[in-house]
Amino acid sequence: QRIQLTDHIAIYLHDILLFFWCTTACISNQNLRKKIIESLNKIPRIFFLFSIWSGLGLVLSWSMHQDTQHALLYISRIFLYMWFYFTLQSSRALDFISQRTILYGTLFAGFMIVILGLLQYFFLPDTRFLFFLGWDDHYYRLISTFLDPSFTGLLFCLLFFTLQMVPQPHNILSRQWIFALKTAGSFLILFALVLTYSRASFLAFGASAACMMMYFFIRKNWKEAVLLLFYLLFLLGTIPLLPRQGGEGVRLERTSTVIARTSSLTEELSLLHNTDWLIGKGMFVSPFPQDTAFRTQFEVPSHGNVPDNWIILILLGSGVVGLSLFSGVLREIFKMLWRKNIWVVASFVTILISGLFSASVFYPFTMIFFSLMIASTSL
Image (cartoon, rainbow, N blue to C red; front, side):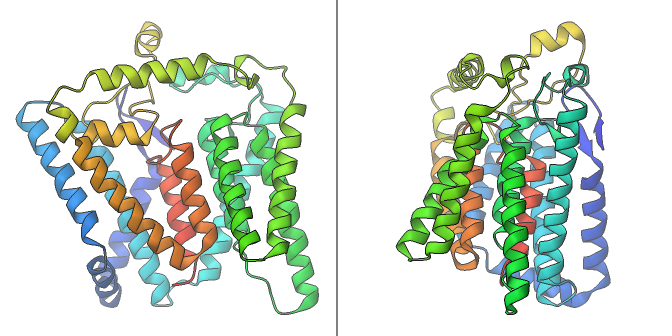
């Protein structure tokens, strides 16, 4: 569904669908519009301060005749997903759609990604031909429908935590069935996760799961704590047994990607001048295509347009001031999520950790899936 317009600009069909769905929903129902406005009025001021600061940076970049085309497209997509979240949340508050529908719909979509990923790994392990369509060339790695192991691995982590949110029924027999299905589904997700060979996803899941395990131990919820311990042991025990018949990507001890990303981040920081450290260059203003020279030689598009670290991205775009404001945004998000569901908090931590090694924080499907997770929790 990805439509490549230029070498560095692409649109997704789902963005068009979401725009028309949100527009139709808001136009057709006055109560929904009022509910969305009420939700917007509850947004903490720090969100608006960060938005205003980022907007001023864009205006400054535009006045200096810098290319702001990419920035406007990225920011438009972020606002579209925020609109989608508030429309979905408001629809649920007005009983137009149920919490159960959102939760099980999200799980269904997630497990479809898992199943398609496993089919791809076993029947189409050689995906190096995708290089000529602008994707990385992977060999014997599970990339599923996202065609990228890091993003796929992160979505598997989010799916795992979403599955833990399924409520327990009151009936004892039904409770046993639900527990068996959740346990089997969790192991299936982890099995698919290890086949991505994504070290960032391993680290993000391991750190979040370990924190959750300590949380349940403190709360004396021994059942959840022991279950998480088994899941962690399964992940750690499976990784050394992974097959290594592929290329460089299946070697977990590889350092080439670490060196490449470190060099890229260092080069991007070197572009900051004195004033840029304070105010930045404008959010998403300067794209940083990866492997530009190599891909130009083969005349193929590049999909890597932002830094592989969300801290560097915010610092480059809005400077130290913007990074400080964004830390306040993160604090407010944590407070909001903590009141909703602890598994959603774990998912948010997972996204932030994964985002230190890949451009996953603002990855379209991460934002959509996480929005669905929040909307499927208690109001």
